[in-house]
Image (cartoon, rainbow over all chains, first blue to last red; front, top):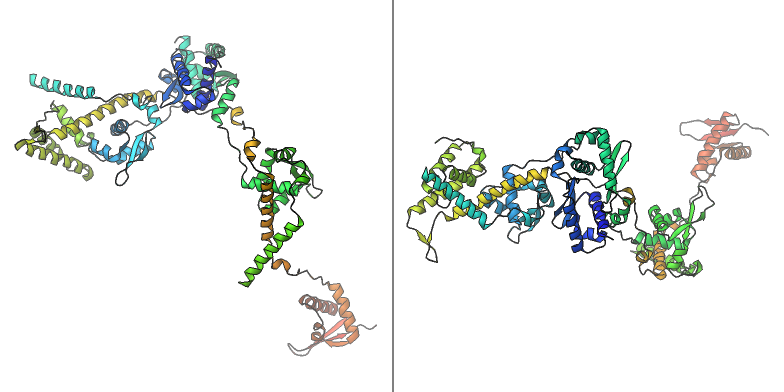
Length: 189
Length: 189
Length: 249
């Protein structure tokens, strides 16, 4: 099959399935190896950047899914009923960020970082399908380990966990110097 | 909005809705009149003929719908229908043995021997091409008589039905006396 | 000092501390512990009416702050490497960590807005694909099933059927419905009456072979009394019923 035709097949697959489809499945369907398939899809992703395309392909942890472009939102909202989207409160966002960056993480660890009980927040995130049980810690009581879901990646437009805005030493330095600057300013005033 | 961008919006609309969308709705969404919108969509339909597209737009009674191209079906089947593995369950084996040895036999007789409804099992065997209708019983309701197929003979390398290992009167007597012994034993206890 | 911000705004003691540090433009690495503790305690006092569960978390931090305050007053502790330990260090690390996640939460919030602008689609599997049934592969289906195995299965089935028959009861004789018709019985009674002329009902019943015959004989007598063929006499209650034939040949 020529590349063009394979791209057509992949488009048909992603369109039909609606949901995310694993790379391996797509590769199997077009009868190619995963590496080639991935390259073909990445090539498609570039092509979809064109103005006359209203959809794009997103990569989620080795799966691919088709969705609309952000630019189409205003137009779509006039026709499609906007999916009911819950707004995450600051508490939930805080908890979400801890789970996202520290995963797999127990409820207790979340609580230690936040300094407050977090049962409710963690439960809500699980209820929203943004966090999930990913295992049990090998410790007394075998506490549940939480991690993020694919829905989390989708909802926060993150391709994969590696793509999360990084939280690094540099960032920490920035916080520090910010604080220092502020302190300095205070002295100058 | 340039034409390209409108096409992008229309693609997003048709993608999201999945179902057919009325021309009027599309026109409203892109804020254009119906005639222009129709022309734009027709132009898109031509574009979608390209080999690297797996979807196309169809027009139905002043509505438009996005769907996959027929060429993609084989590919889709590989994903949407992970091939099922057919298995001969015990129920099917039992039913097949009864049909093979008691043929021609009605469904009712099979049920009497098995003691349970056997519609499903008989139908499955017919579907698999191992059993078939061989006639009708001359009785009220003219029930179908089932027998084995040529395929059955081939599969079991049997030249003809006479060659089936026989279940003879001797064996039946044996079963009977065994059962009697058991009953006797029960009474003695 | 006044309470300018609603207390609920703070997600917890760390949140409150960060707020105080921000407000006072304090270097997080060099927290004036006395000042901060005082401000913190002011907040706590204002929170008296609040939920005890929440309060306990804030109080725990207050205790930590007071502990740090005390240790600051004492000669500096020295760790194994001979370095002076800052009693505030642990708290600073905790605050930094918390601040970091708060910042990330802020980042996520932005991304969530983007994420919300995206639409997805329900699966729309064409019927041709959905209705497709994989052709049956008989090789796979039958595996290495042999005719002998099939025969054994059949024998098992037949044996099971044999077992289902109750070997004891199935040998009992059949109970058949006895046909006793009223006209037949009337003929019988008529003949009996002609033969005996006058007889007791009991006498005739003794000749009946079954309950059904008794019942039908009784019915026949009643019927024939009505038609005037028999006359019935009974002297006492429960006494002998005497039947006399009125029919003359």
